[in-house]
Amino acid sequence: MKPSYYYCPDYKKYVKEKDGIYYKIEDKKEIPSNFYLKINIGSIFTEDITEEEYYAQLC
Image (cartoon, rainbow, N blue to C red):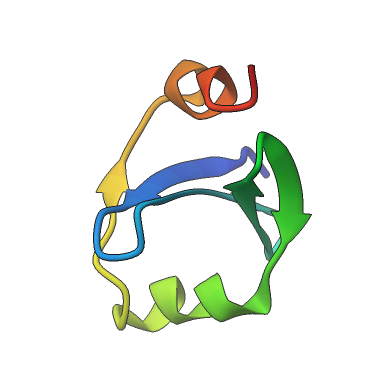
């Protein structure tokens, strides 16, 4: 399954979902985070972003 990429403006975080695991970018590193499972049920507002936008945050 192809990864999904999000920006969560309420938390000012960039998030990737791949194979059911959510990763956030913090200090230019990808960190697994179960907190963002709430995206699945709509508890966290997100904006869809591109893969390029996501990976630009790691540089």
